[in-house]
Length: 620
Image (cartoon, rainbow, N blue to C red; front, top):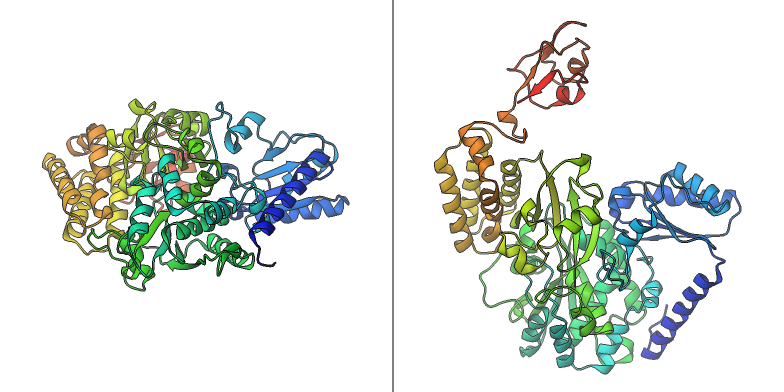
C-alpha cells in the first residue's frame, strides 16, 4: 500500500467499482460470503468457512469465499450468502459443515437452492435491504456495509464510496458548511440523549484552544445491546472517516476510540482499519496531500458501565478512575485533558459520511419531523427473529416485533418491550402502534437509549425484570454520589422484599419517593435514570406489584420465593421422569406409584414441571 493523493483515491474508487460491476454483470463468478461477526463466530462461522473451502476444492470449483460482518440475522447464525451465475443471490441460515456440503452440491453444482436452509426472498429483502424502496421495513444507513463488505479490506470500503465524504470535506467544504449540513440533516446523537450533533461540533469549533480532541464512545454496556460492537466489526472505516471529518471541521488533530476490552474482534478490526488508513494516507500527516493532519488511537475500557457517561469516559482515557464530574462545563468546551472535545457514539459517527456524501436533504427526508434518519436496534428477548435491525425513525413497535422480528416465541402473548436498558422503561401492548422516536417514547415513560430492545412475553414478571435492572445499576454505580449509591441499593432491597412476598404497600410509596430523589439529585445519567424501570413498571403493571404484596403470589411464576411445585395424585403415573431430573433429589416415589416433592428441599428450579408429560405437576 502507498499513500494516496486525492486523484489517486478517486481513481482507485473507480477501478474497484468497475471491477465489482464487471464481476456482477459477467455472471461468471461464484461468491460465498460468510458472516463472521462475534455472533457468527460463536456459532461456528469459521468452521463453516473452512467447510466451504474444502467442498469447493474437492469438487474442483473456482469460487471466491470471503467474510463479512454481522448480516443482522443473529437468530440463524452461521449465516451465508451465496451468489451463483444465473441465479438470484440466496441467504442461508444455520449453515454448518453438513449444510455447506449440500449447498455446494445442490445450489452451486446443480443450480437448485437448498430450501431447508434458505430464507424466502421477501424475508431476505426485509432484513438486508439497503435501497430507497419505501415498501421495505428496514433502511440501512449505519449498517449499509455490514454484511456486504469484507471489514478487513479498505479497498472494499472505498469501492462503496468510502472516504468520498472526507475528500469532499477536505477540499470542497468549509467548517461552517459541514456543521450547517449536519444541522439541516437533523442528526441527533444516537447514544440516548438525542442532542443535536451539529451543536456539539459548533461549540467545540468556536472555542479557541491550542489542542482539541475527537472521541468515539464505543463503551457499549447496556444488557442485550450490541449495535456499536457490530458496526465496528462490520464497517470500522465508517467510524474512522467520520472522526477524521470531525477533526477537520472543529480543528482537532487527534482522536480516540474508547472501546471495552470485552470486544476483541471489534478491537482487532478497528486496529487493522487504522493501519490501512494510515498506509493509504487517510490518517496521519497531510491527509490526501492536504495540509490537514489527524490520527486515531484506541483506548480500552475495563467494562465499567459508568464509563459510558462522557466525563467518566474522558477520565478513563486520561488514566484516571472512571467517575463522573459535574457539568457544566461540558466536554465540547472543556473535555479531555481540559481541552475542547467532541464525543459521539459509534452509531452517530457511522451516519456522518453518508450525510456529507448524499446530502442533508436526503437524510432529513427519512424519519419523523423531530427525529431524522434511522435507528439501529439489537432486537432480543422472547422474539422469533432476534438480531440487528435498522429502521426509519417513526417505525412502530408493532412493525418491529411482528413484521421484522417474526412475532413472539411459542405464540405467547406480548407483554412489554424494554428500550433504553437499565436507564429506560417498558412499552406495553397499548402502545404497540406508537412511532419510535425520542419524543414519543419519552411521552410514555420510556426512552430511545442506545438501541437495546428486549421483548418480554406473558411469562415475564415485571417485578423480577425491574429487580434485574436495579441490581445491574447498583453494581455499576461508581459510588461517588449518595443519591445513586444509597438510593439505588435501597430501591433494590425493597424490590427484593417484594419479590419474596415480604413487601408492604408503604414500600411502593417509598420506591416512588426514592426514585424522584435519585432523578433530581444524582450526579450523572446513571443515577438519574436508574429509577426509570421502577417508575415505568409501577405505572403500567402496578397490579403485579400488588399481587406480590397482598396475595404473596407472582402471577408470571418467576419469583422463586413465591413458587411451589406439587404433584397431583390423580394425574401422576409414577414414570419417575421428574425424580430423575431433580438436581437435589427431593422427589420420592417408586415406579408406577404416586410421587411426592419434599417442599423443604425443593429449590424451585422447575425441571420437574418441564419434564412431566402428564401435566401432573402443579406450579403455583
